[in-house]
Length: 270
View 1 (cartoon, rainbow, N blue to C red):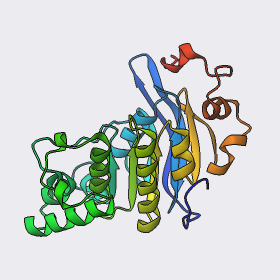
View 2: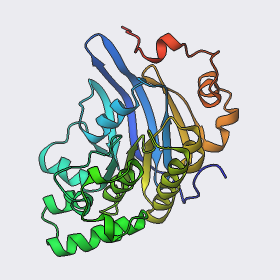
View 3: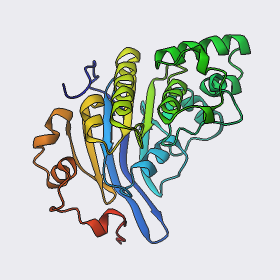
């Protein structure tokens, strides 16, 4: 079955309008317009270097766009700072592409790092919560006191996901959650993501280049190419999108509008 069954709100909780960002002469985002609706998991696809992670970093406030608007529940976030930014981030769970786990902390401390940093709960209660979230992603207590470097790649992904859902976030942002994993682990992580989005009722934005993952976790798909959204549509339409960029990407075709010399280079445009 393609996509995730979820109750999707008709109201956009994340609204991106006209977002532009350049690094020197290279235009990475060139007027991105995108909505993510409440309760859905929208998957953002695109070739390497197309600006997917850059857009996510703008949403998270890690990069400041040159222009444009990013609104979460109607609140403009591009100008947020200090306590207002911190308050927003408490509603957000993030799984970074390379997990971003702290080797100096145990697995369970990584899971509840944000909650402990904010002083929201005592250590004993935090550990109990961490064990609960680890169990939710299929890891038992034996992993809790290990260092992240003692875990396999798939287990590290599960720990990253446990940390992302630790606070039962309203928004879940996942950057290439199955990168570098074998097909069996990829399928397992996808099932966990789909399950948690459905159970938590979270509004999600995921980045992936894995077509199988798109089918398993997406309600809706958007494709980013040369800094702009060139197609959006339901996940069950990706095989018959009618869009040449999506068609070439999904079916892995060499022939098409995406040239190999452009896959790795962002065009300069005035």
